Length: 309
Image (cartoon, one colour):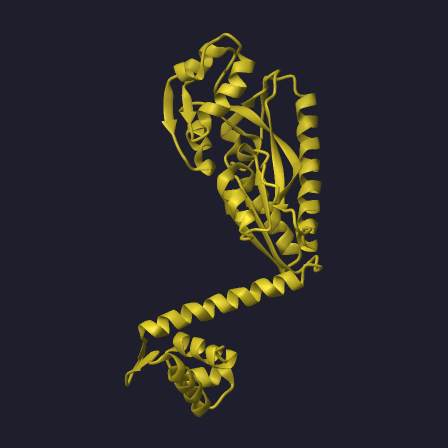
């Protein structure tokens, strides 16, 4: 096994490109730095090409630098696992669909601001990728809209997210013909979501495939941009709508029948969530519950067919 101190010295030399600056950063003499590099080259062959004004890594040097990075990541993962009992310190890793991620990520950043020793690691991905990333231990937690059948995962209901019919703020929607006149803004799951919601809201009126398509966008954060510009309507999950900044330019058609998607929290079944992950979940649950109550109150007080964000 290669000496960890030699590897540390090599990584710093590769970063600074200079033995003198490396010695200053490491608190060593220049002779000690040279000795560490010489020891590595005795085992691995040439790893540095020295020139008067700079130095260059050999192929072996590049491979060794990758190895150093992998060791650093492994050490970080070990420290994270050993500190699983820390509630307010360490990584909180969550992978989610785009809609829920747009809504939850700012809440997680709020949590990090309150507890600066927490680091938020968040990624957007489709359901299959989320499941695989959690299985691979790349993320401790994930949210999916389907119940996984892999016995290596534990799945619990996290929240429900309704689908919403979103139209321009200036639109007057009273029936199917108004939707037809406005036109549909499609997205990767748009046909599925619109069919599920509109078939219940307007039974027998027509099919989504018959509606004119006024646009398509595959970025969840931009789906409502053409709607806000009056170019059409769309159907999206509530969290995506709530994350849209230009809320005054859109409105939600209040429908009698709701279609709800369940979001399932998944993690590896072999071990419990870390204390900081559970702390984050408790925080998110509290925030979501408060927002849902506020939303329900708004719906209960509204006599209009439309709701604002």
